[in-house]
Structure formats: structure tokens, C-alpha cells
Image (cartoon, rainbow over all chains, first blue to last red; front, side, top):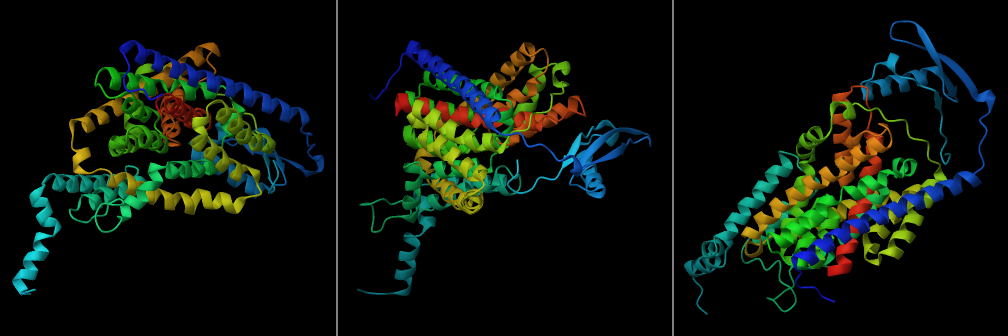
Length: 111
Length: 383
């Protein structure tokens, strides 16, 4: 079928159907992605993080007071400080307003 | 045969490009246009990676008497540009560019928040509105209207693919409009974003996205490819290649292929694609009122797509009780990663501690899928 002409009504319908098709398709994809994530998370074994590899670094605030703590996993203090400084610089958020919960070394092939 | 110096000189001059321009001065206008595009690409840095090859294509194909566009049966030899153009004609280049985009894209933010896919769909609003305007107001054919509407998807390869199938004569105008507006996103979107959102909405800080596992990232492209291509087979060249590229990246076992797809292959095809698109911009087809209409409709499509994304972002803001910043909706127009960066910049202007980039990347890559689906719809109906 090769359409060469459309009336105003037909044009409106094509536009409407097109938009609805895209909406429905991506809504269905939302369901597919949610389903895949649910399956993966259900069957994926959770890796316990070795407590031995934890190190806690107290995080100094900009005013010199210590607030909160950040867990370092296979990362030394110097590297962690660099990472926090870079994140602060890149995001233009002062360090005393940033909260780091954990800094972990990700090995190749690891999640 | 008598050979004289002046005879040879006269023959050279009569067959030169200068003589050709004297016969058809419109080619001079196209050469000037090529130089303007080069200026925009090199000096203004508007999508230079594509605009510079397009501009050179415009220049080369408008030099008279080169025969560079000759197809079989026209002139003595097949022209170099005619050969290159076959990659556009058969949708090879846009598909390979999609392979590269897939290999460069991190779908993690989308997997972490799948609802951002809806923003990618809402931002296709401009595609269908511009289609209607082209059809009803400017009286383009349905096929041409569809190709013009796709400019609103803000996705160059998709626009080129649809135009090469449905509106070959308008391919250069559509491609140039699509890439020019993509480059102008930082100027087009912010006024609309500020107009359609309140200060309070722009200040919203979104919750951190959940971490996405490697397995999810590997299964995602496979699942999307199977689902979308089975449902709309016309999306196979775009979605198939996009997801294949992403699988190369995420599988972790094809690093060399992923690297090639991201760099060398994409660069080579970008050169061929740009030259091919530019070479179709001949005076006969380009210097018409229709070109100006396409450029205007493209801008309208772009703006309405941004509006669609923003309005749906506002709906999500209401539905979630203020947890979604509507500024990420405008990133649904695709144009990765430019429009996501615009969301980030506007978000930070309202609230300096706001960090929307990763949240906007979800709708941004969803927009790529959305525009491919819209293209598949049009190809299905009018192809």
C-alpha cells in the first residue's frame, strides 16, 4: 500500500496513532525493563563484602569539624581524598555539603 | 586536428568550472552556502564532525562539470560521490552510526529508572505535530511530511534514514536542519525550560539512582532488541544496531569490537555520511522555497518535542509528589548527550547543589529509542 494523499482527518489520525504507538511501545518497554531487573535481582547472588576490607575514614568538614564517616573498601586514604576533591570540583558542591557513604575499588569484570 | 596554444586554452576554459558557473550561477550560491556551513562548523563549532564533511560534500557536488555524481549510464564514469551515496540510499551509514552510538551509550540510568522511557516517548510530540503541519499547512506529501517530522526526534541518523527512504529530494535540507538544531540545543531549549517550569520545580533535587548490575546491562540490549524489533520490524536497522553496539560494550568479551564501533568505524562512516548528504544538496533541489519551509518546520518540531518532554516531566513531578525534576523531560528529545547537559546546567542555575546529569541521561537515551520507534512507525505506514 503506497499512500500518496491524506485528508485532514486521516492526517490527524496518523499523527495520533503514531504518538500513541510510541507511548505504548515505550510503556511496554518500561514493563520489560522492570521485569528483567526483577528477574536478575532475584536470581543474582548477593556478594557479601568482606568486613576485613573495610576501613573507616572520618570526613572533615570545611569548617574543620568532623562530620559523618565514609567506608573505604580497598582504597587508601590518599586516593579517597583525591576522589572526594574531584567530585566536589566537578559538581561545584562544597565538600562540607557532600556526603560520601562508601568508596570502593571496582576490579575489572566486577559489578 | 589542429593544435594551437589559444585553442587548447580556450578548450580548457570552456570546460572549466568557471564557465559552468557562468552558465548556471545558482551553483555559485551553493558554493557560498558550502563555505557558510564550513564557517559554522569550524569557527562556531556547530556539530563540526558532521557539518564539515557535509559542507565539503556541498562544495564538491556543486563544482560544475566534475561528473562526480554520475550514476551508471550517465557520462563516461560512475562518479565517486554516487558510489558513496549508496550507503545512504540503502540505509547502511545511519545504521552503522547507531552501532557506534550504542557502543558509546550507558543505559544504566534508564535501567535504574525505567519510567524515564515515558519522557523519551513524550518528547516525540514534536515529530507528529510537525508531520501534521507539513501535511496540512505546507502541503507536503505524506512521505515528505513524515521525513520532516522526524527532525523533531533530534536524531541525525534517524532523520537521514527516514528521509533517504521517504523524501530523497529533501534529504540534504532535512539532514542539515537536524544537525544544525542539535548543535543549537543550548540556545533553543533553555528559554522553553524556564518558560514552562516554575523555580520550585527546577530546584527539585532527585534521589540517587540505584546501582545497576552487570547482568541487567547485558540483558537490557538483548531484551529491547527482541521486543521492539519483533513488534515493529521496520525499526530493525536502527534498534538492532543500537542494541548490538550496546551489547558489544556491556558484554565485556568484545572490547576490541566495541572500541572499533565507538571510534574507527563511526569516524569512517561519519565522513562518508557527511559527504554523501552534502553531495545531494545540488542547486536544483536545494535552492527552493521548500528548503526554507523544511528548516522552519524542523525548528518547530524541535521546540514542540522539548515542550512535550517538559510537560510530561511536570506530570511526573505531580504524580511523584515532587520527586522528579521536570527539567529532565526536555532531555527526552534525544541529541545525546547535549540535551542532558542542558538539563544539568539549567538545574544547577536554579539550585547550585543540583546534579541532574545522570537523571537526564535516562530520558536522553530513551529519546533515541523513541525516535527510532517513531521512524519505524512512519516507515511502516508510508514506506
